[in-house]
Image (cartoon, rainbow, N blue to C red; front, side, top):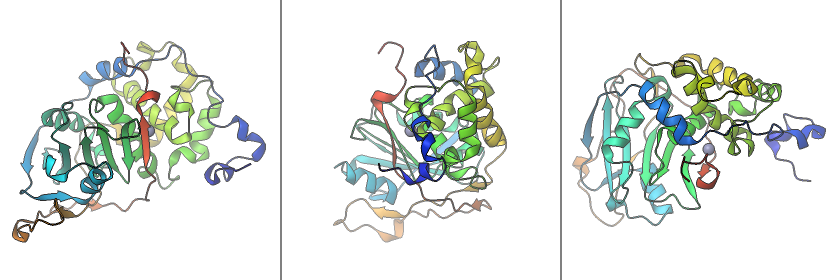
Length: 308
Ligand SMILES: [Zn+2]
């Protein structure tokens, strides 16, 4: 029997059969639309200024991900988004074939995350299709979305992967593989969603939208989930260990370094004078967080839309 190392190191062999997934899925199962639609009005928009990059330049993370999917970097727009609550912009890329989100929607929805959560994200990339049935992808604090999937639910799910790896390295990275999280799971009688049963990191990420909902929607998750108590320890542990990371207000204190600007075309000579400067100009602390695996979120596993 081959045992994944991370799991083997944390739980005795005899308990393996009863790890993630032993708890039944909470009933009723909530749809992802039900959650984001009610949460959205309680996540305030943040004003932003947008600055497009000079023609011919793209950043390394976006170019690499585009090439993996056979996409032409020249079909991608690259821009800095300067929100009012951070001295440094977030650099994003969007393939022009994407219809949802529009550029404005992309900027608006990401800006609704509290800045203390947002600062754990390096870049936001959207492509027409991520491939392999993926709706979203988290990798090294970059979050990516396929066409039609950058809604508030999937955004918080992907951002929760970043928080799992980056927000509490003092406890463990990922936090979801520490006893602090797993004890909470085993103390509960339910899993948040079927997808949350597939692994520890997905169980944590699926708790993200519910944690934001419970914290920010007046009345909490009990408004739509009568059996909320069955996942109460996971909710408390998610929000308790993140604490102010989930709060609105304030300004960014730390940021992750941007990936390097590179020419869109490998053969085309770009004007080096126009090379974008992605270094930090304000006094934010530069974070050095643990590297992460690539974590795709598959479309078929996401909680259903209301009318699917
Ligand atoms: Zn995921």
